[in-house]
Length: 279
Image (tube, rainbow, N blue to C red):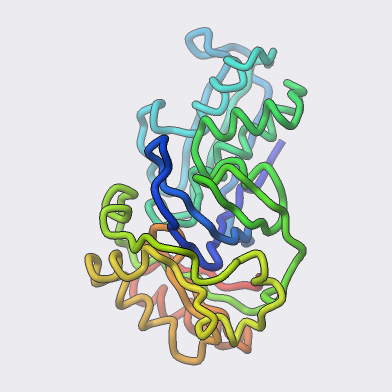
């Protein structure tokens, strides 16, 4: 079984306050894109140390600690939920840059849950609970398509494809690794500038003037000059541009696919990771 865990972009991201449980309250629209990792699961003849899971990794280097690896944690979460799983070998080929705000690790963990659940057969509520334990972004990746996300990220309202659908896009990761702790230390907290549930009806060209923004962007761009440089790189000719998540990847929507490809190509010439396609 081969699956392709996708990256996500935040179309707007507001931090509206701090919750009683210590997490921040967020509002955002998450949209998956076709920049993906590759995860292959095959039956294993023998389990590693009795865990029922063996793993292999290729592509971009991944922290080796199993406590930090969402593939292994997803397997453990299903066992903790009472699932019965056959011995499995998982091979993750890592394409998506880490510390980029693209949700790559969360996507890997959620898609591991989705793949393993073909054997486990857990219901939607149990699977959602397991995903929420892995991380705030993980529940989004149990579903396909855009969603309005709020709470700490665990509350989802699916959205129909909106005004952004089909727009050419370039995503650029300049190589800076932004820790979540650093991003939250400098975030702008306040009321949402608009109800992002209505983003689908708002023309892309009007997003900036309407107040669509990422509350983390000013602080991160001030701390990491590479992020500020990446924002300048993608801005010319863009109908809308923004940092995604807590950074450091940035994206821009363009009227033409040729412009999006050109921006991505020039970023790669700088030694940055980049992707272009359509939303």
